[in-house]
Image (tube, rainbow, N blue to C red; front, side, top):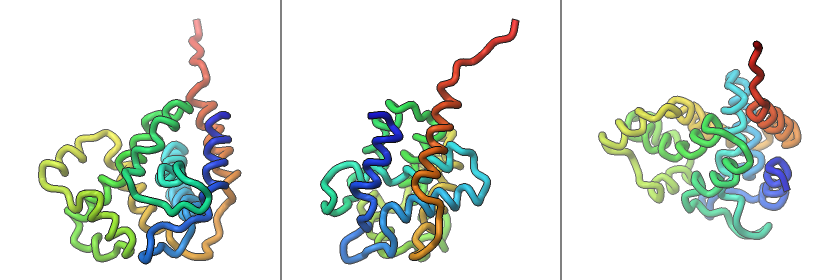
Length: 191
């Protein structure tokens, strides 16, 4: 099964689930992913960052059956082997890997950020290590994809609107297919 088919299967099997327990987010995992990707698109982000926005939480969906609750067990790392093996490069994978660190960074640097988080996001922040210290902030900002991950984090926080209309999953699967085709195309050298 190729990467596109695997992504589609994961969303079809578990995309109907909601994040959290008693601190539920008001949207399903698929609605959240589609909203996040749409926000990235509306911001005229590179296609790689739109794809990262769509797939940033797919690690939470990969394990378990159709009714198994979603858990926040380092989900930002879970899907990385699949995505890398499927041909997605650092411009997609690194913002996904860093989106939890971006939340920790923003909480530690922006006094207005933390109070704006949803209850579920504040709860997961505690599980994810809480606000960054000064050394962690320096290391985070030194990463080449820090800026992209901060953008992704902002869209992640906004992508929780019940009933928001978005393109369907298939629209973004085509975008992933185009991105893979562009990154895997052999370079031609003129002589």
